[in-house]
Image (cartoon, rainbow, N blue to C red; front, side, top):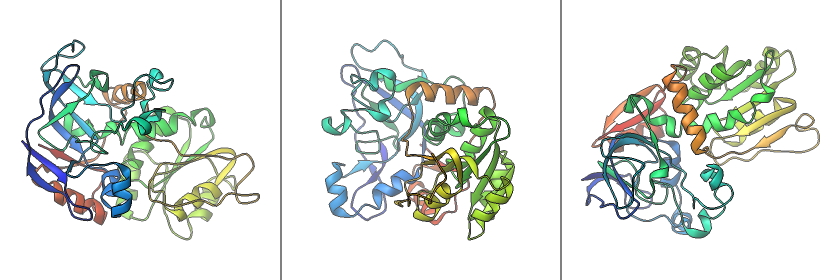
Length: 347
């Protein structure tokens, strides 16, 4: 089968022919119908050699941690899914046994690092191939009649902002304000989630007018350039108060500090992006009792809720399609910042 693999540190990924996996007992082989392209993949491929070797990630490694497909073959003992089922793949695999995993929060598994458990595409072969091997059927959720290409990105670009926003919903009733920094792949989905679930006025920030137009299209009440005037603009739009919750989907030092500084007293500043930045915290730097959070992905039950929002027509992803052969170009475009919404690989 064809697979898009990261084969050498610092080099672009390439298409290679690899054997089709064979499912063992308790495993499932999924024929991939769509796989999402994510900045997390770019982050992994940008790691210097020492950091990559220290991560435990293999070379070569098939990329892709967002995936949907059709069950192609099941191993002995698997009865919860059947050949032909359309499924979405839950990415943050855990041990399944610790306290958090038993709540469906495998994204926060207490044993994953110790036991060398990795998500597909982020430490083990992932979804950017014609087939992907799933270790346990609990990682598969029914996709039903949702379009695979249009909805594959919800497994991360939908689940991650949903998990981040859900924690702050008690603070986002009528008359409140939510700031979304970065309106690309995750950010434009976050705007829709905020509009569907909260009473907040949504203020979107980005450095690109094209992405701000996308933010307006999906429901942002205000769209502001993320420049030297952004803090003043947020203050003006919120009557000087600041936001009740800010969500930074970029994660570089300037955006993190902007999120922290413009969050109102008792609000949440949530850092989702993995841009490698740091935020300054201290007396007088942020308003009183601001909570700074750094969440990761989301739980299995939350992915089910995200898919339900999509079925209800309240959530959609702006996608640009690429063939598997054009996968390297998709990553190049992602690096250049010219993807509107989310790039999707269709094998």
